[in-house]
Length: 129
Image (cartoon, rainbow, N blue to C red; front, side, top):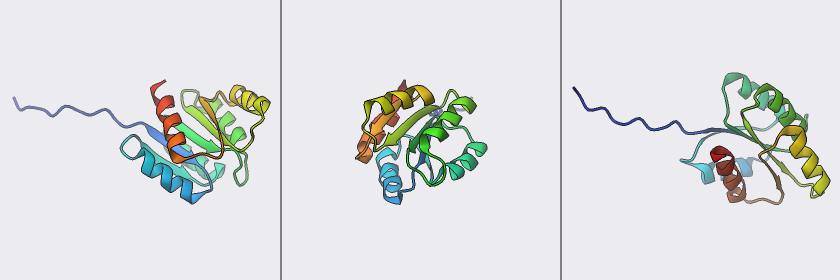
């Protein structure tokens, strides 16, 4: 009987929704080897990607062209409750952050300014939780 190589577990699949190309690139470099990263520049583009595959984690900016990130993540919570959701926002109001976490069942609400390493840490925490 031939020896079989052990199968490696599949990498978690992450969708990053943000309209800032530099953030998409830097986060891709930060998460390389940790997950399979897909990107979308708007909620509408993310909806198309959601129709094609399951994501373990979705990281979304609050201020997007078209639909706001919190509204998008609230829809995702209803459609895919097992998917972890992370919101990035410039709002520092504790009430907004608390309300957002409850409305969209967030794993994390990250307040900007952010480094790619901050986002990567939150993604890794969501994956392991």
